[in-house]
Length: 263
Image 1 (cartoon, one colour):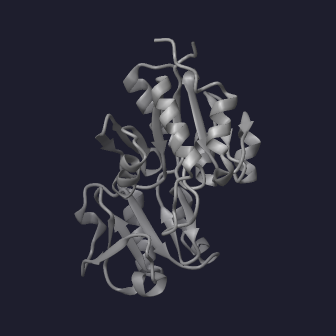
Image 2 (cartoon, one colour):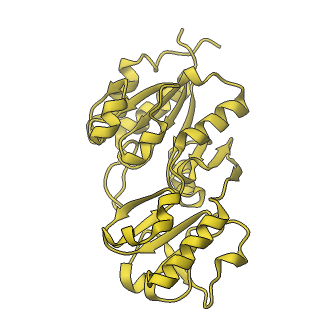
């Protein structure tokens, strides 16, 4: 009998192949997830996406648990327990700097699939299809008690003009704009494990991209996909195959995770 493990999977490039709008879950990945559930392991998604942006995919893959919002959102047994906002004073300062320097911007102030923007400049600059944008004339960040993410339209390296970014976590997934969002997946994993009263040493994480570096820490076992970036591979305990060549299945099989757990 095997020991019960707590498995946390990134979505894009780990569970899912393809780019935005073309995402698909390989058949062997779905098969592996089914085998893991039947074996008795705890399964969770660990994603940078907001909970609202990831919940449909969570349900599609049969998950009930999720670390979302770059580590700041926690869902257990299908219930969102909460999302920790980013520091409000620093987010307001970022918006003020964007306004002073002419950068189009948007905010996410609730758990939804829609960002807010003060005018059409953000959409006109980015032509973004990742999420919808609702224009709120006179949008003022001080009107919102919690701010979860911000979006700044610019091409690299123009973001270097924004000094406030040095005090906030941010990343760039699209050439037209950057995401100001949490980047500490380990934070959410620890919150789930503490909630469950489980041992960090029983965690296994699976990831591929730079935003997975935050959960590739020494507290637990780390699996990098074959298509992972070099920074993730350098921190991994195991490097498996690519997401589209049975990477999840092969990793779980080699780790003996398909064996029933000892309850």
